[in-house]
Length: 273
Image (cartoon, rainbow, N blue to C red; front, side, top):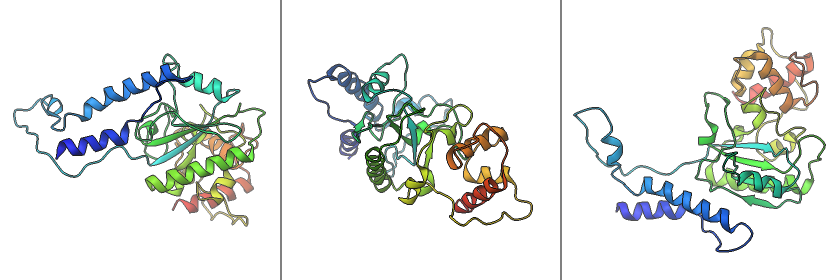
């Protein structure tokens, strides 16, 4: 039974690679690493784990209820590079050590670089809600954009929406769990900058504020609101700037909130309650 279960896991996790082509060398490295990770699963009894516990009273008793990694978040980035090829080259650099599950080119081409069930290196240090390791629970998507002057072509955004539809349906990812790198690591990251978050929210990925905004109630606390939304409020100024990068997209270097911005924050907060 275990052999059948784990054969299924390996088939789901391992991605077949072409023997030749432009990226033949990196495909072989990917295959080699994937096979190395698969050896962890090939020992269904996991004896090497339980034996390391410093206790005389220990035993392996198998459960029939388990599965493989399930992504619960999607984190969106911009590449801050000048082409798809440049980004691919960066993600092939083992010394740099960064990667993403998907890259979407300016012309809408979707390139997958890491299996959905594997842990890509795209998020780094940060916090969203109570989660401080989104590499382990998220799908990373890089959008080919230099982050400064590049527009967001409609064909690229539509390709992103198609990909997000697949991910949301496949892994039952909640609408609230589609975020940007700047949400998770404000103060360290600003990507994706100038991004059409409203368009994504209209398609069911993340939230946007109402067209008609309400006055916040007396005693409305921005720190609490940001915490409810998901921001790390240990440094309130940084959290405010992160919020403004996502929802306001102007005066993002100022850690103060206007009356209008407070209304926006209140509207967003209510969607997370």
